[in-house]
Length: 435
Image 1: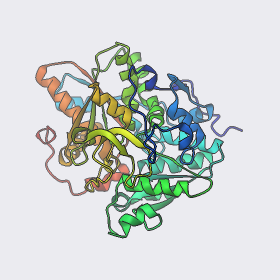
Image 2 (image 1 turned 90 degrees about the vertical axis):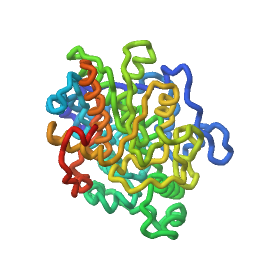
Image 3 (image 1 turned 135 degrees about the horizontal axis):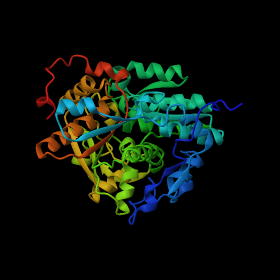
Image 4 (image 1 turned 120 degrees about the vertical axis):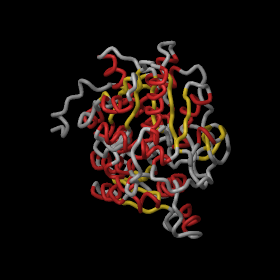
C-alpha cells in the first residue's frame, strides 16, 4: 500500500518551473576544476546522482514532479499564504503585506522541497548514503528527514559554530537517523587543513562542502547532496512561487515587490522565479529584492567571477558573485547565510538589474524579527528575519509615499529551534530600531 495514499495532491504544482527556458542569455557555464573547460554532464557523475545531473542541465520549461514526491509534498504543501495584518497595523502602512510560510514544512523550513526530490532521485539509483553539509542545520534536518522517507542514509558535516549554537538542529538530524559531524573535522583531508591549524575554527559552509564532497567521492555507494546554489536546487524550490502565484491570483492580487533572504539563493529563487518569469515575458512590473547580511555580503560586496563553491577547490568553478573561496564569515546567528558565493542564476539576475540586492546588520534584523513575533505570532528564523527587515523598510516607504503597494515575501523558516540566537536581546522594541 502506498504510504502516502491518504494525502491529496490536487492543489499542488505538477511541475517545477525551469527559468532557464525563458532566458535570452544564459549565465556562463560551470568549469571543470582541473581543465578549466566547460563542464560536461558526465563529469559530475562521481559526485551527484544521474537524475539530479539531468535536472541540472535541463532546458525544458516544465520539469514534472514525480508522483512519489508529490505525495511527500502533500504532507505539508501547499503552504499557507498569510496576510500580515498585524504587521501592517503596527507599521500603519497602506501597503498590503503577504508572506508564504514555509515554516510548516516537516523540519520548519523550505529546504524539504529539494531534500525530498534529491532523496527520491538518489533512492531510484540505489545510492546508499547522501553526504552533505549544513550551516544553520535547516538543510541538514531536511535531508535527514527526506532520507528517512526514501530509505537513504544521510551523513552531515555541520559548520562548527552552528553545531555549538544550535544543538536542537543536530538532535533533530540524529532523530531521523543521520550522522552529524562537526566541521572542520579531522576526518577528511579538507577538514584537517583547518582543524589541524585551529581545533576551535568556527568553520564555514565552504569548508563543510569540501568535507562532504571529499567523503562522497571516496566512499562507494555515496553521493553528494547540496541544499542551495545549483540550478536544480533552485528549480525544486519554485513550488513556493508557483503556489503563491496561484494563491494571489485567487484573490485578484499581483505583487509589486517580492522579497527573500539570500545565502546561496534557494529560498529567494523559490519565491521569485515564477514572478521573474512573468517579467521576462513582459508581464507585470514587479520588483525583486534579495537580502543578505552585512558581514557576508556576496551580492553587495563581492565580485562577479568564476570561483569554487568550496574552500579547497574540489567543486566546479561557478560564475557567481563571490567573496572568495577563502572567506570565513564571522559567527553570526544566521548560519544559513554564511556562504561566500551566490547561485549563478541569482547572480545573473543581479547583474542584469532584475534583482536588487540589499544588506542589513544583525541588530536591525533581530529587531525586525521581534516586531514580527509580536505582531504575527511567529518567530522567524534568523535567516528569514533579513527578509522581514527589508519588508518593513518597503512598507514604511509606502507609508511615506502614501502608496498602496502589495509586498510578498518568503518566510522561509521558523526560528523555534534557533531561539537561543535571540537570547539576551532585551533592547526596547521600537519602529525606529528597525528603520
